[in-house]
Length: 356
Image (cartoon, rainbow, N blue to C red; front, side, top):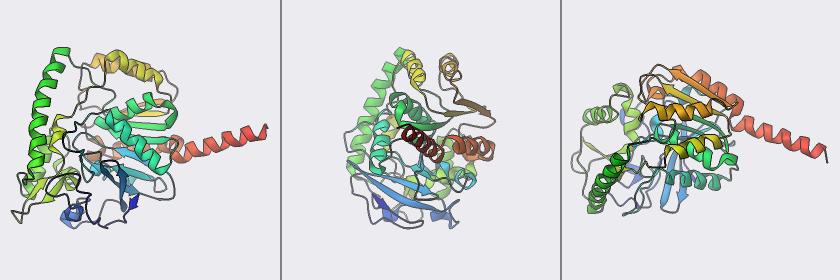
């Protein structure tokens, strides 16, 4: 594993992305790399080797303890937690990563399709790299769903989950699912061919990029905070000195979210045993018929370590108004995070040994 200090640079990508802008020395790690302002909180830029290249991330806080693993939403990146990090208890370590094809992480090889469930493999790879027996997860949107699924599939490998504004795999009418598969596969094929062309994507001015990010989130992120999502997703144009282009993999637009039926989701909810805090943004949608959401929530609320918090805000409430959630988040981490979980395991071990 390679670790870089705050503000440091990485020599270059392994070139597995197969696209212009793969030189990470020319990429941006936080909004201040473009604006000149300091990061919201000091961090170490890290790179974790994976079979197809690397996973990039921002490590906040002490590096001699196990961090919480932070995962972002669809087409976002590690910058999603930039505004939450300064409010986190300083003794807590937090590793915010870019998922494959997002931010500074390597794209999947040409011809490979992005599937939501594949991110379970990414989490397991990171755990293996760091030799973590269990993991503590924070996820927003798509990654909140990933955390839900991971905790159901590997209930003995999770210390805690904090999910933000997407509870479970969404259900769609079957005819709609079939039509989506048809159109997405065709569009994916087109973008996969574009990636191999090596041509520079369309470029924009800084202000135009901010506007595109703002519109792309359906106005969910306040415009003044879009810079935190934009920085790790763009590269400087080689054609136009004052313009930039998006570097995230365009195939991500046709991500396969399908995980399973509502019956499977209910079974997953039944299998989750770890402490679990779910935060719902009141001004955000449920992304599916609410009856499916309610059915799974009804299972979870019966669990002793499940906590539900509803706050005013949009889908990106953790970016727009992190103060609204930080109190419950810090409290939950203090009770169930990596340090608390490790202390509990040590206490159990000592109790067991004392009986021998």
